[in-house]
Image (cartoon, rainbow, N blue to C red; front, side):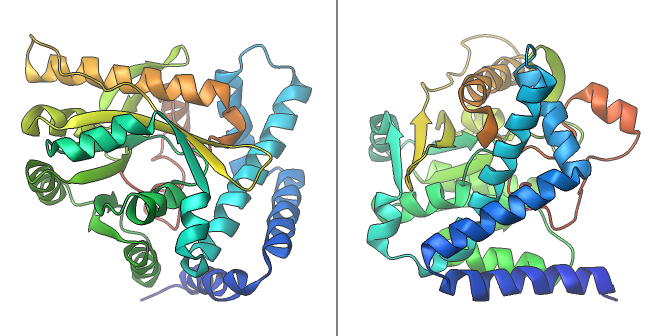
Length: 316
């Protein structure tokens, strides 16, 4: 039976996609900023966690600086939402012109090589816009993975939304999803995975901003198994309506070592690339959940939002 809370959550997202996309862009931007500021002033658990995570990224930040970062982070997070609610109504030209990426050639050359490409991203800026740019601007379909959300109707909304942007969306269901992703790569396809937060509690331990966390093994394992190119990508906003991005150098498969050892080395390389991008644009990293093992152990519970309508748990 669907709970009242689940029905309210589903209704809120349905209203977002039906109402916000009809608003003039300046109105939507202003609405997002207002909601962000209200949430920031209330200092709920998500805002406090965001600020705590930023303290790892900027360890010498004063309390005032951390407060400024968390406010900017909430504004960035709500910008993501306002854009996502409006994306289905954007023209192809608006999508294509809404994203500019450095070292795009690493991606386009990888696609042209037919060896398969894995894009691995942290939760920065607007992943959905970057994906829409790939399917629209580069005319390249891709496959991704999404965790099932509660209620099921909300998961269905997210799948329909992303499929409407040209993505193939697989449920996060362990081996079945991995096998399909591997087949897509062997066929020379493109897959995109948000990959700095392990949802299974069985990921690879890495050092991230000086402390230990776990990140998904999937990107590294897929690259080893299929020979696909593994490219880290980071995203950020500036003061313009255009989102920016960086395609980082490929993560190579080590020439020696066991599969586990290779996976560890490659996942650490992904973590290092993510850390570089996040350190440059911390306010655009939307991590409102526990991430580091020390925090997870202290909480003695699964990461916040596990299995719920948490849009930042998009794929892994």
